[in-house]
Image 1: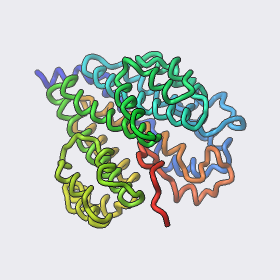
Image 2: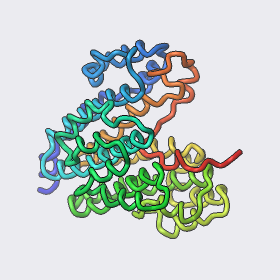
Image 3: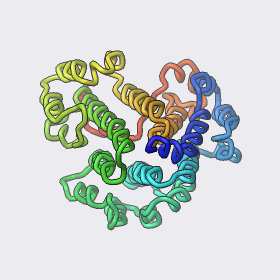
Image 4: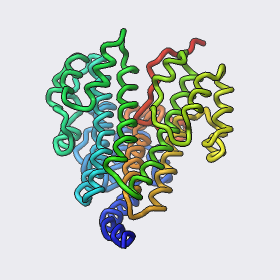
Length: 367
């Protein structure tokens, strides 16, 4: 009876998620996009797809910049979330509600970047504003009227984000890296704790396995990237770790952080659970961002296939759609705002840029 009940309660939204997943771009379509020689051609190609045509119908590629393009395409992700939400009931909505925290954290990181660089937060917020008005409890008017970091943080009082950011601003010379890192750690720690409160039984087990592996891999990504490219002390490395553990235990984290060299840390990972479980992926561990994104996508998709009548397909779809947009936007020499890029260079150097690149602004190793 429990199995039948699960099938009945998820049949509608599972069918919707499958149909939406079928509209994601395929490999050959990415290659076609990469072959576009101009902004207009790339936008014209994307207009062929029902998920992007309404957003790009009146888009003026001659009077746009990266932020505007990204904000416009993100409208497709928000539309997908809204479609799922309209089908969701009970635990399904509970999952989507706490998943939404990811969008809020990403939004706040974007606001922090703009304030710190002296840009207006209000720019390029049209699609996001309508989406947040429906789902968020943040005072976006107060946030977007902020012109300093202090004003932005004060606009977050009575929200879950206030305390982690307030703690950072009272440290000595806080940086954008520090603020973004605190949001990352808070978000993943929150997800890990809330799964036990909002989900039960099979749903909780599925999310625990999917997000447990994701957090482990994210910690590996951050630590390996930091140890290879940045001068960071052991306390600084520990501070960037999400303190939620699955197959990567606290002792494993300690061994990686305390390893004298990058190579010694790499061997610890290669010989550990994930290095053995995903040996082919970890063979080229230097591509940590790509490895993380593709492995998490694989883990989420596999969970969705094994558990079609659960929240797993929703989780997989939203992750895949977010990274579809990242793949469209983030070509090195980008098609969408650099019409002079060489097609072969674009195709061979496609880079998946995930929503957290924690150490991008940290101290780069000289030489």
